[in-house]
Length: 348
Image (cartoon, rainbow, N blue to C red):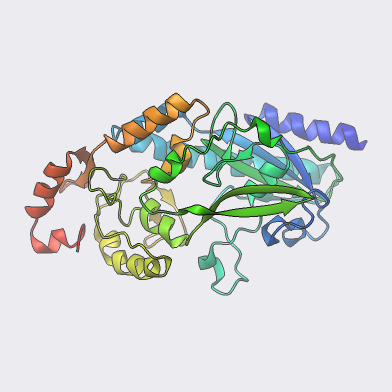
Protein backbone atom coordinates (compact mmCIF):
# COMPACT_ATOMS: atom_id res chain seq x y z
CA UNK A 1 0.00 0.00 0.00
CA UNK A 2 1.08 3.58 -0.63
CA UNK A 3 3.11 4.85 2.37
CA UNK A 4 1.02 7.97 2.88
CA UNK A 5 -2.29 6.11 2.59
CA UNK A 6 -1.20 3.38 4.99
CA UNK A 7 -0.02 5.94 7.55
CA UNK A 8 -3.31 7.82 7.39
CA UNK A 9 -5.29 4.58 7.55
CA UNK A 10 -3.53 3.52 10.76
CA UNK A 11 -4.04 6.95 12.31
CA UNK A 12 -7.74 6.85 11.46
CA UNK A 13 -8.06 3.39 12.99
CA UNK A 14 -6.56 4.61 16.27
CA UNK A 15 -8.60 7.79 16.50
CA UNK A 16 -11.84 6.01 15.62
CA UNK A 17 -11.17 3.58 18.47
CA UNK A 18 -11.27 6.21 21.21
CA UNK A 19 -7.72 7.56 21.32
CA UNK A 20 -7.36 11.33 21.71
CA UNK A 21 -4.00 11.56 19.92
CA UNK A 22 -1.84 9.39 17.68
CA UNK A 23 1.74 9.73 16.51
CA UNK A 24 4.33 7.80 14.53
CA UNK A 25 7.93 7.25 15.64
CA UNK A 26 10.52 5.57 13.43
CA UNK A 27 13.97 4.12 13.87
CA UNK A 28 15.33 7.35 12.37
CA UNK A 29 13.41 9.71 14.67
CA UNK A 30 14.43 7.63 17.70
CA UNK A 31 18.09 7.33 16.69
CA UNK A 32 20.51 8.00 19.53
CA UNK A 33 17.91 7.41 22.21
CA UNK A 34 18.27 5.12 25.27
CA UNK A 35 17.74 1.33 25.06
CA UNK A 36 14.02 1.75 25.74
CA UNK A 37 13.63 3.46 22.34
CA UNK A 38 15.11 0.58 20.33
CA UNK A 39 12.21 -0.72 18.26
CA UNK A 40 14.19 -3.77 17.15
CA UNK A 41 14.22 -5.07 20.72
CA UNK A 42 10.61 -6.18 20.29
CA UNK A 43 10.68 -6.72 16.51
CA UNK A 44 14.01 -7.15 14.64
CA UNK A 45 12.39 -5.99 11.38
CA UNK A 46 10.82 -2.92 12.99
CA UNK A 47 10.77 0.37 11.12
CA UNK A 48 7.98 2.30 12.86
CA UNK A 49 5.90 2.54 16.03
CA UNK A 50 2.31 3.72 16.30
CA UNK A 51 1.83 5.59 19.58
CA UNK A 52 -1.43 6.87 21.06
CA UNK A 53 -3.07 8.30 24.18
CA UNK A 54 -6.35 7.51 25.92
CA UNK A 55 -7.83 9.80 28.61
CA UNK A 56 -8.61 9.00 32.23
CA UNK A 57 -11.89 10.06 33.85
CA UNK A 58 -11.40 13.62 35.16
CA UNK A 59 -14.36 13.32 37.54
CA UNK A 60 -12.95 10.22 39.21
CA UNK A 61 -9.64 12.03 39.71
CA UNK A 62 -11.08 14.75 41.92
CA UNK A 63 -13.11 12.31 44.03
CA UNK A 64 -9.93 10.28 44.46
CA UNK A 65 -7.89 13.30 45.57
CA UNK A 66 -10.59 14.41 48.02
CA UNK A 67 -10.59 10.90 49.56
CA UNK A 68 -14.26 10.51 48.72
CA UNK A 69 -13.97 7.60 46.30
CA UNK A 70 -11.01 5.30 45.75
CA UNK A 71 -12.82 2.69 43.67
CA UNK A 72 -13.75 4.79 40.63
CA UNK A 73 -10.19 5.90 39.86
CA UNK A 74 -8.86 2.36 40.37
CA UNK A 75 -11.49 0.85 38.08
CA UNK A 76 -11.03 3.59 35.49
CA UNK A 77 -7.26 3.18 35.53
CA UNK A 78 -7.57 -0.56 34.97
CA UNK A 79 -10.19 -0.05 32.24
CA UNK A 80 -8.14 2.51 30.30
CA UNK A 81 -4.96 0.44 30.59
CA UNK A 82 -6.85 -2.54 29.20
CA UNK A 83 -8.24 -0.38 26.39
CA UNK A 84 -4.74 0.83 25.50
CA UNK A 85 -3.34 -2.70 25.45
CA UNK A 86 -6.33 -3.86 23.40
CA UNK A 87 -5.97 -1.04 20.90
CA UNK A 88 -2.26 -1.86 20.49
CA UNK A 89 -3.30 -5.44 19.70
CA UNK A 90 -5.93 -4.24 17.22
CA UNK A 91 -3.42 -2.01 15.39
CA UNK A 92 -0.87 -4.81 15.31
CA UNK A 93 -3.28 -7.41 13.96
CA UNK A 94 -4.65 -4.98 11.38
CA UNK A 95 -1.13 -4.41 10.04
CA UNK A 96 -0.35 -8.13 10.20
CA UNK A 97 -3.41 -8.80 8.06
CA UNK A 98 -2.19 -6.16 5.61
CA UNK A 99 1.07 -8.08 5.29
CA UNK A 100 3.28 -6.08 7.68
CA UNK A 101 4.77 -7.97 10.60
CA UNK A 102 3.76 -6.12 13.78
CA UNK A 103 3.67 -6.63 17.56
CA UNK A 104 1.56 -4.92 20.25
CA UNK A 105 2.95 -3.59 23.52
CA UNK A 106 1.10 -3.81 26.81
CA UNK A 107 0.24 -0.42 28.27
CA UNK A 108 1.83 -1.22 31.62
CA UNK A 109 3.36 -3.76 34.02
CA UNK A 110 5.50 -5.67 31.48
CA UNK A 111 9.28 -5.54 31.91
CA UNK A 112 12.45 -6.85 30.31
CA UNK A 113 13.76 -10.10 31.77
CA UNK A 114 17.33 -9.80 30.44
CA UNK A 115 18.52 -7.04 32.81
CA UNK A 116 20.69 -7.76 35.90
CA UNK A 117 17.67 -8.18 38.21
CA UNK A 118 15.25 -9.29 35.53
CA UNK A 119 11.74 -7.82 35.72
CA UNK A 120 12.52 -6.34 39.15
CA UNK A 121 14.60 -3.67 37.39
CA UNK A 122 11.27 -2.60 35.85
CA UNK A 123 12.81 -1.69 32.50
CA UNK A 124 10.06 -1.71 29.85
CA UNK A 125 10.57 -3.33 26.45
CA UNK A 126 9.94 0.17 25.04
CA UNK A 127 9.17 3.47 26.73
CA UNK A 128 5.73 4.70 25.69
CA UNK A 129 6.68 8.08 27.20
CA UNK A 130 9.73 8.57 25.02
CA UNK A 131 7.94 7.45 21.87
CA UNK A 132 4.98 9.69 22.68
CA UNK A 133 7.02 12.84 23.22
CA UNK A 134 9.19 12.26 20.18
CA UNK A 135 6.15 11.70 17.96
CA UNK A 136 4.21 14.76 19.17
CA UNK A 137 1.58 13.22 21.45
CA UNK A 138 2.53 15.64 24.21
CA UNK A 139 5.34 17.30 26.16
CA UNK A 140 7.28 16.15 29.19
CA UNK A 141 6.01 17.81 32.34
CA UNK A 142 8.34 18.61 35.23
CA UNK A 143 7.44 15.23 36.70
CA UNK A 144 8.53 13.32 33.59
CA UNK A 145 4.93 12.37 32.86
CA UNK A 146 3.63 13.10 29.36
CA UNK A 147 1.24 16.05 29.42
CA UNK A 148 -1.35 17.16 26.85
CA UNK A 149 -2.99 20.55 26.39
CA UNK A 150 -6.51 19.26 27.03
CA UNK A 151 -6.04 16.30 29.39
CA UNK A 152 -2.93 17.20 31.36
CA UNK A 153 -1.03 14.13 32.53
CA UNK A 154 -4.23 12.13 33.04
CA UNK A 155 -3.66 9.83 30.08
CA UNK A 156 -2.61 6.26 29.42
CA UNK A 157 -0.24 5.59 26.53
CA UNK A 158 -0.04 2.61 24.21
CA UNK A 159 2.12 1.51 21.28
CA UNK A 160 2.39 -1.03 18.50
CA UNK A 161 5.62 -1.72 16.57
CA UNK A 162 5.64 -2.64 12.91
CA UNK A 163 7.88 -3.34 9.94
CA UNK A 164 5.66 -1.02 7.89
CA UNK A 165 7.47 2.11 6.73
CA UNK A 166 5.16 4.81 8.09
CA UNK A 167 5.57 8.58 7.89
CA UNK A 168 6.82 9.97 11.24
CA UNK A 169 5.07 12.80 13.08
CA UNK A 170 7.03 15.70 14.51
CA UNK A 171 7.45 16.57 18.20
CA UNK A 172 5.59 19.52 19.65
CA UNK A 173 7.33 22.85 20.09
CA UNK A 174 8.72 23.27 23.64
CA UNK A 175 7.26 26.79 23.73
CA UNK A 176 3.76 25.34 23.50
CA UNK A 177 4.01 23.32 26.72
CA UNK A 178 1.74 24.50 29.53
CA UNK A 179 4.22 23.27 32.18
CA UNK A 180 5.35 26.38 34.04
CA UNK A 181 7.51 24.59 36.60
CA UNK A 182 4.95 25.03 39.39
CA UNK A 183 6.32 21.88 41.09
CA UNK A 184 2.96 20.87 42.52
CA UNK A 185 3.71 17.40 41.17
CA UNK A 186 6.70 17.28 43.53
CA UNK A 187 4.78 18.71 46.48
CA UNK A 188 2.09 16.06 45.99
CA UNK A 189 4.62 13.20 46.00
CA UNK A 190 5.09 11.80 49.51
CA UNK A 191 7.95 9.58 48.30
CA UNK A 192 10.16 12.34 46.86
CA UNK A 193 10.57 10.52 43.55
CA UNK A 194 11.47 13.63 41.54
CA UNK A 195 14.70 15.47 42.19
CA UNK A 196 14.10 19.19 42.84
CA UNK A 197 17.55 20.09 41.48
CA UNK A 198 18.69 17.60 38.82
CA UNK A 199 17.25 16.99 35.36
CA UNK A 200 17.31 14.10 32.91
CA UNK A 201 17.88 14.91 29.24
CA UNK A 202 17.10 12.48 26.43
CA UNK A 203 18.12 12.99 22.81
CA UNK A 204 16.22 11.15 20.08
CA UNK A 205 16.72 11.86 16.40
CA UNK A 206 18.63 15.07 17.18
CA UNK A 207 15.79 16.36 19.37
CA UNK A 208 16.50 16.80 23.10
CA UNK A 209 13.86 16.60 25.84
CA UNK A 210 14.26 17.24 29.59
CA UNK A 211 12.40 16.61 32.82
CA UNK A 212 13.20 16.29 36.52
CA UNK A 213 15.48 13.39 37.32
CA UNK A 214 13.66 10.51 38.88
CA UNK A 215 15.32 9.05 41.93
CA UNK A 216 15.05 5.37 42.92
CA UNK A 217 11.83 3.82 41.64
CA UNK A 218 11.68 1.98 44.95
CA UNK A 219 10.31 5.28 46.26
CA UNK A 220 7.28 5.05 43.97
CA UNK A 221 6.81 1.34 44.63
CA UNK A 222 6.85 1.91 48.38
CA UNK A 223 4.31 4.75 48.37
CA UNK A 224 2.26 4.45 45.15
CA UNK A 225 2.16 0.69 45.65
CA UNK A 226 0.36 1.22 48.95
CA UNK A 227 3.01 -0.13 51.32
CA UNK A 228 2.85 3.19 53.17
CA UNK A 229 1.29 6.57 52.54
CA UNK A 230 1.52 9.12 55.36
CA UNK A 231 3.14 12.36 54.21
CA UNK A 232 6.03 13.55 56.36
CA UNK A 233 3.90 16.46 57.59
CA UNK A 234 1.49 13.96 59.14
CA UNK A 235 -1.42 16.04 57.87
CA UNK A 236 -2.43 14.00 54.82
CA UNK A 237 -1.84 10.62 53.23
CA UNK A 238 -2.35 8.63 50.08
CA UNK A 239 -5.13 6.04 50.06
CA UNK A 240 -2.82 3.66 51.94
CA UNK A 241 -3.74 3.20 55.62
CA UNK A 242 -0.14 2.34 56.51
CA UNK A 243 2.16 4.89 58.14
CA UNK A 244 5.58 3.24 58.03
CA UNK A 245 8.46 5.76 57.84
CA UNK A 246 9.43 7.13 54.43
CA UNK A 247 13.26 7.20 54.24
CA UNK A 248 15.28 10.15 52.99
CA UNK A 249 17.98 8.28 51.06
CA UNK A 250 17.45 6.19 47.92
CA UNK A 251 19.47 3.29 49.25
CA UNK A 252 17.17 2.93 52.27
CA UNK A 253 13.99 2.36 50.27
CA UNK A 254 14.53 -1.24 49.21
CA UNK A 255 15.01 -2.29 52.84
CA UNK A 256 11.94 -0.34 53.91
CA UNK A 257 9.94 -1.93 51.11
CA UNK A 258 11.00 -5.46 52.04
CA UNK A 259 10.31 -4.77 55.72
CA UNK A 260 6.77 -3.58 54.92
CA UNK A 261 5.86 -6.63 52.80
CA UNK A 262 4.49 -8.88 55.62
CA UNK A 263 2.13 -6.14 56.82
CA UNK A 264 1.11 -5.36 53.25
CA UNK A 265 0.23 -8.98 52.60
CA UNK A 266 -1.75 -9.25 55.86
CA UNK A 267 -3.93 -6.16 55.46
CA UNK A 268 -7.34 -6.62 53.86
CA UNK A 269 -7.38 -5.57 50.22
CA UNK A 270 -10.02 -3.91 48.12
CA UNK A 271 -11.50 -6.03 45.34
CA UNK A 272 -11.01 -3.48 42.56
CA UNK A 273 -7.23 -3.14 42.47
CA UNK A 274 -4.78 -3.74 39.65
CA UNK A 275 -3.14 -7.11 39.16
CA UNK A 276 0.65 -6.77 38.97
CA UNK A 277 3.00 -9.75 38.69
CA UNK A 278 5.74 -8.18 40.86
CA UNK A 279 3.53 -7.19 43.80
CA UNK A 280 3.25 -9.52 46.82
CA UNK A 281 -0.10 -11.28 46.46
CA UNK A 282 -0.35 -9.87 42.89
CA UNK A 283 -3.14 -7.40 43.75
CA UNK A 284 -1.95 -3.80 43.65
CA UNK A 285 -4.03 -1.02 45.14
CA UNK A 286 -3.67 2.23 43.20
CA UNK A 287 -3.27 4.54 46.21
CA UNK A 288 -1.38 7.53 44.81
CA UNK A 289 -0.42 8.66 41.29
CA UNK A 290 -0.71 12.24 42.57
CA UNK A 291 1.96 13.62 40.23
CA UNK A 292 -0.13 12.46 37.29
CA UNK A 293 -3.57 13.29 38.63
CA UNK A 294 -2.88 16.80 39.93
CA UNK A 295 -1.25 18.02 36.71
CA UNK A 296 -3.91 19.90 34.72
CA UNK A 297 -3.50 22.45 31.88
CA UNK A 298 -5.37 25.07 33.91
CA UNK A 299 -3.09 26.28 36.71
CA UNK A 300 -6.05 27.17 38.91
CA UNK A 301 -7.40 23.61 38.61
CA UNK A 302 -3.92 22.33 39.48
CA UNK A 303 -3.85 24.44 42.62
CA UNK A 304 -7.37 23.40 43.58
CA UNK A 305 -6.50 19.74 43.17
CA UNK A 306 -3.43 20.15 45.34
CA UNK A 307 -5.60 21.74 48.04
CA UNK A 308 -8.04 18.84 47.71
CA UNK A 309 -5.18 16.47 48.44
CA UNK A 310 -3.57 18.24 51.38
CA UNK A 311 -6.97 18.85 52.99
CA UNK A 312 -8.23 15.31 52.38
CA UNK A 313 -7.07 13.93 55.72
CA UNK A 314 -5.41 10.65 56.64
CA UNK A 315 -6.69 7.24 55.58
CA UNK A 316 -7.40 4.53 58.15
CA UNK A 317 -8.75 1.01 57.73
CA UNK A 318 -11.76 -0.30 59.61
CA UNK A 319 -11.92 -3.93 60.80
CA UNK A 320 -14.02 -4.91 57.78
CA UNK A 321 -11.31 -3.58 55.44
CA UNK A 322 -13.06 -0.31 54.55
CA UNK A 323 -10.72 2.58 53.85
CA UNK A 324 -11.81 6.06 54.92
CA UNK A 325 -10.23 9.44 55.54
CA UNK A 326 -10.31 11.15 58.93
CA UNK A 327 -8.46 14.03 60.56
CA UNK A 328 -4.80 13.45 61.51
CA UNK A 329 -5.79 13.52 65.17
CA UNK A 330 -8.55 10.95 64.75
CA UNK A 331 -6.17 8.74 62.76
CA UNK A 332 -3.66 8.78 65.61
CA UNK A 333 -6.38 7.83 68.11
CA UNK A 334 -7.55 5.03 65.81
CA UNK A 335 -4.05 3.55 65.53
CA UNK A 336 -3.37 3.94 69.26
CA UNK A 337 -6.53 1.97 70.11
CA UNK A 338 -5.49 -1.09 68.08
CA UNK A 339 -4.03 -4.13 69.76
CA UNK A 340 -0.29 -4.63 69.11
CA UNK A 341 -0.81 -7.29 66.46
CA UNK A 342 -3.19 -5.13 64.41
CA UNK A 343 -1.12 -2.00 64.98
CA UNK A 344 1.92 -3.72 63.44
CA UNK A 345 0.03 -3.87 60.12
CA UNK A 346 0.00 -0.09 59.91
CA UNK A 347 2.99 1.35 61.75
CA UNK A 348 6.23 0.34 63.40
